[in-house]
Length: 370
Image 1: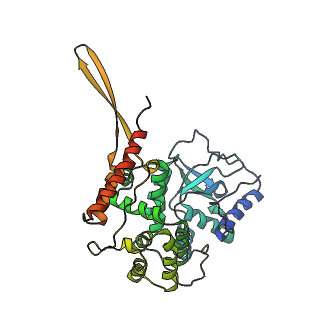
Image 2: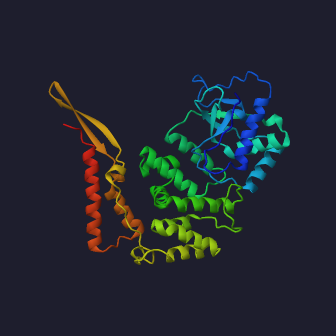
Image 3: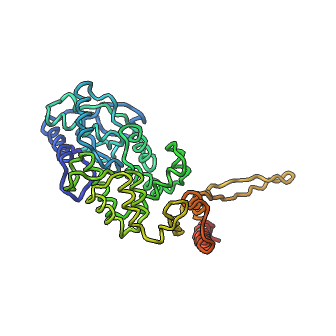
């Protein structure tokens, strides 16, 4: 049974790149079988470099990059023609049966796509076997590995970064502080991007992804507009401040009006409901949303304290939580960043009561059952 190079599952018809990767895998199957020794066995050391046939590689379904611009791909292919593959791919064992791809590309999908095109359309058979660094990563480490590798090379879009950071937080319960420390950023940077990804409706997110694909020449774009907007961080922040029902209309208005930069942001801001347009320091007011107890991530640590009484020693065990991730702490960060420490007294009391109520419930859930 032939090996397959697969890509992220999609409900749409296969793109040109997806069909290309599948055809390269088919070409490998048509050649005489040869012992490759590519099984990703457990004995393979972490960080080992080895040559792998591209038919044994598959794209990562959790790849944060959703846009592959034609111009950048052409430049990458030209570079590989001239000098070969300078930077190895980063892969992790797929854990699949021997007749399926043995490695998942965690960093280097653009290079994999470029290599597949060169092999399939230009007959560059010498590029079939490529150097790969095997890194055994999973869970949040896989996301961080992919995110950091992409951020220091061709920059991810603001939407791609926001979605990836949100997934790290939502799926693994990491605090803003921990994510910020791992990425070398501050907590405000993390909180802003998580907030954008959490507040965007699925429909608005899909349309924004299509916009950035169109703006960068990605052939998988479904938009007909010849001059689509490339969503900036400021525009994303403005769109995410709208209620979900208004986001899609605001984006379409920006596209139809061919608005750019400050004009696009001003158009979106004008569609904000009156409850979020109360002026504070000249900025639209951003409402604070209390997270439910089930969504409140309160990492715990167990501290043991030894108490000496003469010859007797008593060990006292205490469980502590990271209070920086409570609703109440988030509320005061919101006051500082969004409202400039100015808020009507009644709204303040309501927000504090709601935050404390949810935090109290979350903290009780951490108490051991008697």
